[in-house]
Image (cartoon, rainbow, N blue to C red; front, side):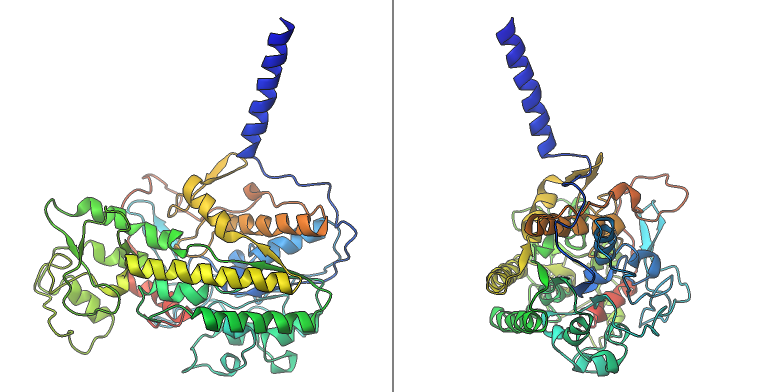
Length: 488
């Protein structure tokens, strides 16, 4: 009997160990503390993810859950004497959409559909422009790696290189420094997180490879990223620097939500005719959206999916009108069935085809190779979001009894724009940074408890499941268009 008891005990212990490998409880980490490291200043450098941008806008009640603000709170809990972690806050309901002048923030108007979009509210305004020092969070929505050392975006409010007002929001006072680097150096931080490079491929992908027509070249990225780390390390020789790398952006619900729903509605024997990369005219490429490496319909296409098969200007005609084409491209005939006829195809800007996806993957892989080598040569540490993202995409993530996936709305990880994380998604990102900080610093910074963070705001009556085709006005995406420089 004793051997049987020993075997049973071993099996029980083994089961516990295996179960904890996909734990659905919040990670506890080591004993709380900084491991002998002194931290009195933490600075975050990055793009819209660092800024806490979610549901298509920058707004204060969302910015409170930016991953840098969460990290700052957990550093304080471990004993860091940071003081107030300052961010360039934008009062609710957030920044204005440049096309409408109304608040750009999406809300979940109804679970039936679901219906998603801005409710037409008056916008908020910057809340702490008078801060007499640089912000601790220097995340600039829309920033690419070039922007770390650039000064022209600070002074340019319209025209080249981009018309992005968030540069003026974050770098609001030339006396504090005209570059992100200058303002970071002035704060002399002990710890820096830098996560740039995502937008160097994301703008290409979200616009269906239209604007810009290619990601940042790997050679240009390598040069710019090396310059950025050279400058940062020279300015802050003793800082602990943590870098984020880049995952497959096509895992975002912006790319994975609409295609399967469109595929289910394509009649038997009918194929979706779509424009491949660089084509804005007659298209003979076709798909059922079910084959291997099928093109991906972007979330931008949600408001046009219901018009498939229609003629009389109801499908492609609405697309060309919304995008202010002065005339139809040669060969286009919007009286033909939209999306089902070569002369009225699904537009290139609303699809990430297989070749474009491969281009995006190759760019991200090249960028990550640069990030890895530059980190090694500059005494910096990499948070491997590429592999983390793959795991979430394939298997989901269990934390404290909740499963997070990359599904739109129901997955809990992403906000309503399908690109930026939710508050809990930002908490997950913060915990990934903290995990590497603990490992490299020998620290015991506690992880944030995700259940304490808000989920996606929803209407009071949640009657229907989130299974239908999302309904999002195409015009509502204009905010993302200028954010990434595409001007959709």
